[in-house]
Image 1 (cartoon, rainbow, N blue to C red):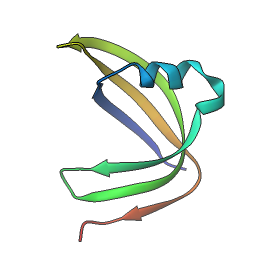
Image 2 (image 1 turned 90 degrees about the vertical axis):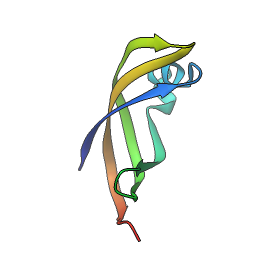
Image 3 (image 1 turned 180 degrees about the vertical axis):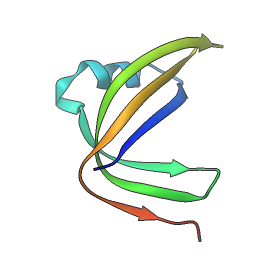
Length: 77
């Protein structure tokens, strides 16, 4: 299992909807590490969503994702 803390800017309230709706807590995600050019793909559980502010109509947030099974790490090419 792998746990990752994430932060980002959401252009709409999708992150809130996913945090509230128990049916979408586990989904298939492709997490991109832009600074490194690598990706992590698999099923992850979304948790600990916190709205930390707003910037020009977009929501700033932090959250955690935990793998729920096998995942694939693809290093930068």
